Length: 287
Image (cartoon, rainbow, N blue to C red; front, side):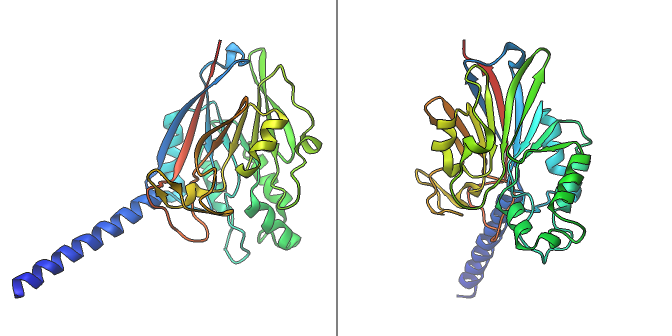
């Protein structure tokens, strides 16, 4: 009887250790998702152009100064990095809120052009109390710090990505929190003869993005549905149960949307079968 109980205890402890280790790995073991997107109008100068997407960090650290995340990015050697929001948390009770992202950017040593759009956490924190976005200064001051680190923050703006004599258009849609998205009013019309890439935190407006004329959309927000089940997909998101866009590539007409599963967690540190993700998109011509 004693031996049996001892055996049961050992098995129980082993199961508990496995669960704890698996849980910690799911929160901290970074995955890299590689996808190739074919674009008919891609200038030949951009053949093989590599884009890294980071999203939904929520002040998460992968080693001191996010060293493990920095090493992942450096191994990829992207042409540009795009950041699609929620890199901090919507809370005025967090000391030095947003400093995790600042340190990450500093450790990237300005090696890559970086483009950033806000999510609801950046914008929501700003609108709660304009004068308490951070311990020092407002949202504008924070974005100025990003700019000083070489980051281009796109608040309903367009910027060209130029390589030799060719260009593609990069648009950034600031998180608008509520109401109709009004994308054409905010960004203008797209150029039908050029490649148009859109950064927007929320994937749930894919119909509007596609109708507007985005060739590629980079989005995030859903955290991969937190728990990924085989044949079912993600379970929870900010929009409710079983999100339509929980991660990966989605097609609508001539548009492709890339949805990152994100890096961090909020409000609950929960990831099951859904590791933190760095997305790598390689552009190729389809001629």
